[in-house]
Amino acid sequence: MDSCEKKHGMNKGFILILLMVLCIASFFISIGNGAVKISPKEIVDAVFFEKDTINYQVIWNVRLPRTIVAGLVGICLSLSGAILQGIMRNPLAGPNIIGVSSGGGLMALTILILFPEFYYLVPVGAFIGSLLATLFIYCLAWKDGVLPTRLILAGVAVSSLLNSGINALMTFFPDKVAGVIGFMVGGLSATTWSQVKLLFPYAVVGVFLVMLLPNKLNILMLGDEVATGLGLNVEKTRFSFIVLSSLFAGSAVSVVGLLGFVGLIVPHMTRLFIGSDYRYLFPGCIFFGSSVVILCDTLARVLFAPMEIPVGIIMSALGAPFFLYLLRKKESV
Amino acid sequence: MMGIKVEDLYVNYGDKEVIKGVNFQIEDGYVVTIIGPNGSGKSTILKAISRCLKPVKGKVYLDDENIYTINTKKVAQKLAILPQVKNVSSDVVVEELVSYGRYPHLGFGKKLKKEDLEIVDWAIEKTGLKDLRKRFVSTLSGGERQRAWIAMSLAQKPKILLLDEPTTFLDISYQLEVLELIKELNETLNLTVVMVLHDLNQAARYSDEIFVINDGKLSKSGCPKDIISTSLLRDVFRIKADIYEDSINNCPYFIPKKIDKIVN
Image (cartoon, rainbow over all chains, first blue to last red; front, side, top):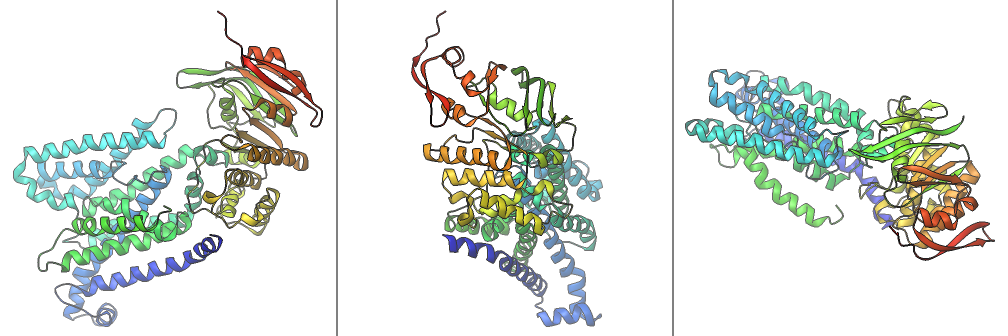
């Protein structure tokens, strides 16, 4: 047992490097595959040296923004989920629990179905919707402080309320449902540089916070009372983390639609690889989260080419069984 | 005054009044045990002192400063708490858990310096966990695990340690192990200890002073010899008991005989 535990500690840095390699590899796989196959060498040539080839056009205008958005979405959602699972000390917590999907979804669908002429407001609307739903849930759970269980229950209740709104909209306007399916399952088709610009600030802030905050989460994991005893302001920390993860997940949802599954499952998978210490878990989630979304999106484009499947379907179809496999293999978690 | 002072404390759980006006002070270097029947509010008092529960009324002072207005990290540098409900991920090793005790002392970067690591080593040594420092906390026995948590509190370098039922769920040998450790820390480090215990004989043996809480009020306080009496056991705990003198440990002990039926 002792030697196994030592190995465990030493491996973490190595696993992190592996995940980083996976991230870089998936970047090249994603850019190289599609209607035109491009080799890694051609990718480097096209990005840095040749400016007027077809490869350059394909990569620069279509594949690069799409791959970057996929990566950023993966980062935002998995960080969001990792934070929420930590502050609620509950493995089922994810962006969906704090109303990101239902709040963002209802707002986006309201715009798409009732005010289609304002379709360009969908990202902003989804973002605001997610944040409002989160704050609403937080206020409902507040009673001399917020307990994780109460927050989760309030989240489940509010989410089903908002989801009934979504379903009502789809029932009353069946003719417009086809147009919103893409948003509902989450997809990355027709991504451009403007979406990269939208997501980039959040991802940068995310990576920056990863350097600063893991200790607070490690402490919070020990329990509210222990954390208080160690001089952590539990209420304040929990609130700021909830807002932070809502911002992360909301920004991702606003760009690609309801892809909340990533936020639930990637942090778990990363935890199975690298353990629950947030100093490793955060960077692990950044690398693995982006790899997962990038690779799934590549599959979504290539698998039934020229037809494209929404990435959310691939993600769930592959992610869930793989996750179950990991869960069975590693009994200790 | 150096130490803890509780002034006119009222604490509620929701709408229910649990603590109804308690006053006491605890001077540095003492081992104080709070006893009382279930639901009397003894743990609640500890939670109020450890700022996990906000009082409705009244104040708690730590070295003459109001505990709710000073920076919580400053409090944590002097006062460590070991609650009943603790949580640790299955892959946290002992030395990692102990190092979390340095949290209130760390600067902005939250990096452990050489000095912090030395304190972690010292806390591990003090609690006899040297051979177990690389083990997962989740794989330790109950007594070892409790020692690991105490080591974390020690790494905080507090002068006061609050423990909420530190022996609950431990079998008798682990109970003694933990209480002996607490006593030793009190003697060698002059650590002030305030704890809640259920076992009155253990309270009598290991404390300098005992506070008896009954129905949200401090009904009696003093040294074990004055506290453990047939009248207290009858009035507060509702049992009939014979009291003896433990000449080896120089403390009173009692053997419960039967429940004293409440006659209305």
